[in-house]
Image 1: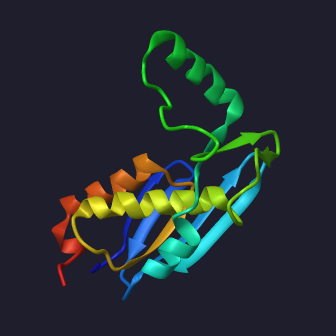
Image 2 (image 1 turned 135 degrees about the vertical axis):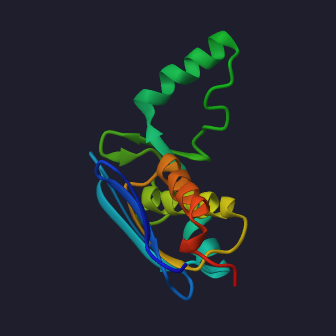
Length: 154
């Protein structure tokens, strides 16, 4: 990275600044679970130990009608969603518990790393993420790719 690049959508924001390694500061607040944070330098060890096991998540009350729709119409919606791959939130708890602290924000970091890989090569930079998701992640990668003066191949 040569300079700060940032994208915003209301209260959601995502930025990347020059750094010697890929590091992430992520924050996510969910209505019934509160605010969660995760900070770390991305390495094979932190990826495997802190991030890889973090499941996708969602409210069970939103998923059940979609699963029923998929079953009755034969349309593949939420195909891979089950309790082994998705943390179902019911009220103020996660059905079956979590796979470590702040699992939802760790999953968002996992998504972010995958989406950054769309740039086509390793990225060195310090990422700050507030309530990010795939749409904002893709917007950051697109903004980076549109502005070659913001980055360099090393």
